[in-house]
Image (tube, rainbow, N blue to C red; front, side, top):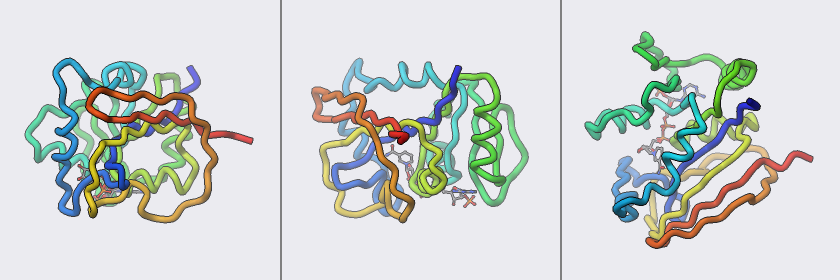
Length: 177
Ligand SMILES: NC(=O)c1ccc[n+]([C@@H]2O[C@H](COP(=O)([O-])OP(=O)(O)OC[C@H]3O[C@@H](n4cnc5c(N)ncnc54)[C@H](OP(=O)(O)O)[C@@H]3O)[C@@H](O)[C@H]2O)c1
């Protein structure tokens, strides 16, 4: 399988993935019985997850089961602690990690954010695909998905889905010319 690195993330219409204090309760506006916005189908295509330490801490603070099953998980941090189970706290080169993973057999690689982590991928052209769910709310302030500068990257829109609650999901692949 040609392993792809895929960002799957949700933002407000004005481009925020969380409020300034990290609050993500705006995501619950979209909760609807029986609707997961393609999450389970998407996660069935991935066996590796990469996320930032702050997002990892946020998940822990929510007291929910870490939603990655038995997938291999890399938590980016500059202060790595020991690996636990299928979790590795990683502080090496991100391009180096992606190169290594892409040279191993496996399913796709899921970047779960947050914004600083997304920036680390973008600055080295590491995303092959982006699936961005736009939540119909203006947060006005918070953590911007695309808050820091990075090199221009052309995209091709390969899918759009509109859901009953007003979420619009955009699916892009990197256009390579
Ligand atoms: N709306 C959504 O779908 C969505 C998705 C994901 C996250 N979020 C929210 O976004 C917020 C967190 O986003 P964030 O941008 O503040 O933080 P983040 O990207 O989750 O984590 C940042 C941390 O990751 C580590 N890191 C990032 N890049 C690195 C690199 N190149 N090398 C080594 N370590 C690196 C550093 O950890 P150390 O400080 O340990 O060194 C850094 O402080 C949370 O509130 C979370 O809930 C929302």
